[in-house]
Image (tube, rainbow, N blue to C red):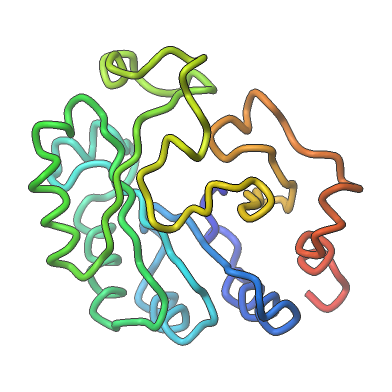
Length: 204
């Protein structure tokens, strides 16, 4: 959760967790903007299991409207370079069905497949009220949203005990789709998993 590559030690932490908890599946979600060539080279030899890239739009117009503040060419170049390294982990491309993306959905899926990513499609959600209304007017009412069941993805187990969203500050949240509303889980319950304790231990 949040942009993991803000943390300069994120790759070190991934390898540390995998060493201490080898049966844990580690996934990072990133918009790709901070995956420089140096980071990509180190990431390609890491023990990561899944990297999900979230880039809204495959052309500059959609990209700059939906991801303001990021550079289109640099970000796409980062992802393209990482994919060219053919790392041992899966690189997924998260495609959110914003209204402006729906007419280009087939083209978008093909774009990411041609780059070597595994595309999966998610419905838009807006629990925190952060998305422009014109992009989500086809979104179902809040009461119809069903958390991870709203994701058409081979990577999610659909079971909350199998999927633990961890924020940049090591807080664990109840649902990656509604963490603003639900807040964080009690620290005692989170620590039972061992992952937050591993992340905050003296060794790392």
